[in-house]
Image (cartoon, rainbow, N blue to C red):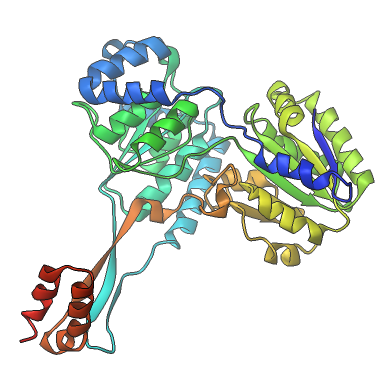
Length: 429
């Protein structure tokens, strides 16, 4: 049953803490299964991939083909409806412009001791992109993951996507072509993450793996972190909406359902300072669920994980929002800036009544791959920096080493590392 709370109630603190701590990730313990799959792929390579694909996707890779050829991706793009092609192109352009502004600058200078110090940024050589092929197909996610890699300067971008029964979604293929993906492999699940991490005879290893997936995919990324870099271990989608009574209840209901329709484990929460408005939104959600094509999924998520919380003032809601550290946060008020200034923990914030979260999923420009499960307390959304690394550099001459070297010698001796001390001291005599 959807939770209804009032922050002035005597039991609110306990009830809200339970809401914050509620676990929505899959309950099944998949760690052992994933570890076995990873070990199998590492040991048997393509043979293991073919077996898992036959088992889970009912697909003989040797018959259908392991890789979806470039010609098929081009045909998918050329076959798109004109308006849909224009929408994908608009989204791609806006994503590229936004992420291009994220590129860091190199540093190179001489400090007060005469030492040259700085840092140089370079892209990883290869990145892997996982694209789900189950509940829904998301061409927007292809753009959001692939374009920052391209902007960063990644040399090779390999995409894996399960194609159950051999069916590949043409929108996903078209998006891959727009984003400049180099390879598209018909592989899914934890086995795809293992293949990207370790490489096989057919599929070259990559340096970073990004992209959403089910519990097995998320667990594979977690276990393989260190072998490869990852974007994050993502959980179910979530949205928090902070809204006053001047909003149209139908708009806010639609915003809440925009995340509920993703998955039965998604979460949608409304904070408002008006109890009558809270009632109106709840009624609007109920009405919209009866006509929504994804109504069964959305209703399950809303009933299991949804919440409406009435507070005396919206200012007072912001510390509660920070405790949730939501993936998406809408501030649906006439002047959102004072509330926005109070936000410390959120993946992405949508300001004002005319900025629904869904516009950020597609065409606004900032990345929609965001931390979930309260991870916005310490993590950020996907960016160009996920595909780059920083190399520092140092250059001393005799004079600058003479200025700072004695301190290094002293510290090395204090740590009991005489060879460290000697490597500096020998240059000071």
